Length: 113
Image (cartoon, rainbow, N blue to C red):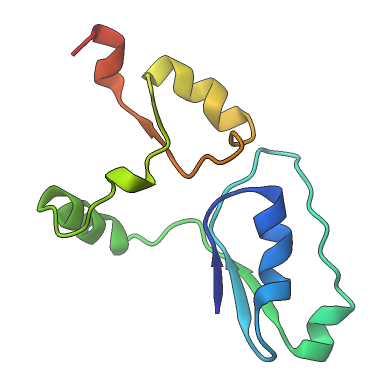
């Protein structure tokens, strides 16, 4: 099973190719509206690869927040940059920067806290 979480065109297109025969590519990353990616459909049925998407798991958010709050997992290495709430609108509407892993929106940055 391959999980695509970056939301980059290259990783979305590559996920089905990385899945093994009979495997699955799960697309979790969100690309900008209207962006398209190249996937070779001819290959999918021959290797029996499924491509599925998922946008929301209502049971995972609280658990993930607890793991972060208790520092059971360290997420700081995953944050490439921090943004103000105002800058988030542009960041969400734009492709990720080269090498960016995750951008973190920190509303308090706008008020200097």
